[in-house]
Image (cartoon, rainbow, N blue to C red; front, side, top):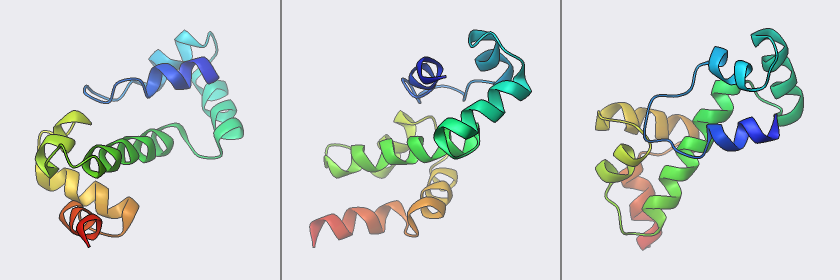
Length: 104
């Protein structure tokens, strides 16, 4: 499970990996994989993936080398508004507000 998690969060640039692909790599059924993943990491697979994805975006913006749009693209969002909604869901502020808070 730990090795699969590393592969899962290695690159956020593309589509999220499917549960079937992940469970195949782990050589177990999708149900067993989902249950074991949640037991190890405390959250369901896609919720965990999304949290890590948004944390990666926050880290990129914190470096102040990337704009909101660039950070969103780096974590797989082609639509900036969808990225902003997902970011706000996790951090309770829009990406632009996050960047402004870094500058204060």
